[in-house]
Image 1 (tube, rainbow, N blue to C red):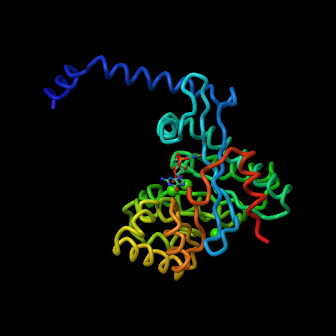
Image 2 (cartoon, rainbow, N blue to C red):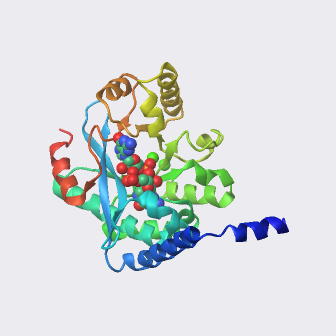
Length: 279
Ligand code: C2E
Ligand code: CA
Ligand code: CA
Ligand code: CA
C-alpha cells in the first residue's frame, strides 16, 4: 500500500494540477454566483399525455457566468454538492420556482404545478423542511402544487431520517416523486413504504420504447406497476411522435421532453403556457 501511495505521487502530472486548479476556480466563482445573480431557472413543460395540455413544469437550473458562459447543471451540481453550496443554491431554486408557479396562477387563473430537483446533500441538511415551507409561504403557493423530485440514490441508505423527512413533507401536502426511475439499482420495496406520489421513468427507457420489443414491455410493466400502487407516471425524454402514440396507448399519465418543448427561460415559458392551457 505504501508503494502505491508513492507511485500515485510520482504520477502526479501538470495536467492533474490544472484540473484541480480549474475546480478551485469554479468553486470560488460558484461561491459568488448567488449574490451576483448568475443563476437562472429554465422551465420545461410536463403535459397530459392524452390531451397535450399543460399540467406542470420542471425547474431546471442554469448558471450564466461571464467567463464560462452558460454552464449546464451536470457540470456544476456535483461540485455544488461536494462543497455544500447546493444547500444555499437549492434554497434559491425553491424560492424562485414557487414564485414562478404563483405568477403562472396569477396570469392564467389555472393551477400549474412546479417540480423541483432536490439533491441528497440538500435533502439531508437539517434545515431542509423549513426551507421548503418558507418558500411556500413566501410565495403563497398551495403545497400540492409543489413536487419535489428525489432520486433513488437517496433511498439507498435506508435511514430512518430519510423516511421521517419524506413523511413530514407528505403530511404538509407537498408532492414527492422518484426521479430517473429504474436507474438507481435499488429494491422496489421502497415504493410502498415511502409516501411517493409520482414516478418519472428515466429517458433511457423511453428511448428504447420504439427501438426494441423488450424496451416496450419494460415501460408497460413500469406503468402498470405504478398505477397498481396508485402512483402517477411521467415519461421523461419524449422526443418522437411515435413515442407519444405508444405512451398514450399504454395510459402513461404525463409526458415531458423535447417533442413538446425544450426547457425555456421564464418569459418564453409564459408564452408557451398561454398557448397550451387546459380548456
Ligand atoms: P433531470 O432531473 O433528469 O432533468 C431532465 C434533464 O433532461 C434536463 O437536463 C433536461 O433538459 C433534459 N431533457 C428534457 N427533455 C429531454 C429530451 O427529450 N431528451 C433529452 N435527451 N434530454 C431531455 P438539464 O437541464 O441539463 O439537467 C440535468 C440534471 O441536472 C437534471 O436531470 C438534474 O438531475 C440536475 N438539475 C437540474 N436543475 C437542478 C436543480 O435545481 N437542483 C438540483 N439538485 N439538480 C438539478
Ligand atoms: Ca428531475
Ligand atoms: Ca403525498
Ligand atoms: Ca430525470
